[in-house]
Picture (tube, one colour):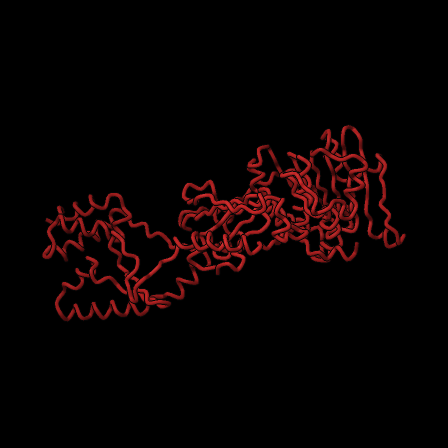
Length: 473
């Protein structure tokens, strides 16, 4: 039992493992209660089907079920170890109390008692002892259900020192973790109501794929048939950072940054188990940071994915990796610029940009677009001034802060919108027309400038330009 404490659970993954059992038991409500005093505890209560006395004893048995046995499609268990390993990874005193059809059963593993007796001594609790336990009042509200209670939280105490302050801080991380891994259950995707509350405050789901965002682009659903079962794949391209609210970004930045959060999101029976990885199938690129692929895997294929006890790590078999590689390339491809010719100018668009980007294999450079109307206007000055303007443009090109821009974009920063007012654009338009009226007809001026920055982002650009021409005349 002492050796099994070092499986590698965190408080977040341990709590999630217990809630897996609640979902398997058909629970629609899960309450997580905790307090650092007078005796620190964590209690997880559900309104699932509960267990008989014999089933409760078996649930406290190590490997009480065979990992190769057939499981129902909604069963989130795997090895028959989760309740015990998850619990004793956090505490030395594990209590299980369950209600079914009016019958109450309670059992307890106390590691200190095992050391003292040197025997496998599962302690049975009386009804009176059960009723005195933290969390029992919440269980007593339900006709059926289960209470899992952790006491002697030595692992957590060793990590944080002061449980009074440390337990609260750790529960914030627990809330975020549960919001992520159970977001599809909290959204009711499994076909029924489901809620999680921590000290009576409901947890809201956090969808890392932003599926309900109007600017998210879902791709077509694809399926891989394996051993008579089907793995479903669906790619998503998240909106540009400028279109994301602060809350959207927090949901999407699962691994701390958008770049690190790209990749496959593996769901086992709608429960998120692995996220933000390409399984070494593809590297993580800055241009691919908006790419996500939802992968739905049935629990009947656990043996192929090498799912670990914590349900926190899995490795796809070679046959599935090959198919995932194709999907990964397809989802990342739209966000990359593919260049077929050496030195070809990229980013050709209908609108006239002030900056041109030139690619040369693995190198690139920025140059100011000499065909931009504003640049033409500057170049129409006398020769001596024109030479000065060209020197200035070259200086700007050679001092473009590429490294700084890359670092800021890598931190998911977005460019501040200058938000030019109509008056600002009117003054700019008047200045440009004053320089270009000798070389362009009024209609040609309006037509060419309306498609350039910053006019192209203003729906009244043509009106502003026409007024500038009229007012000047």
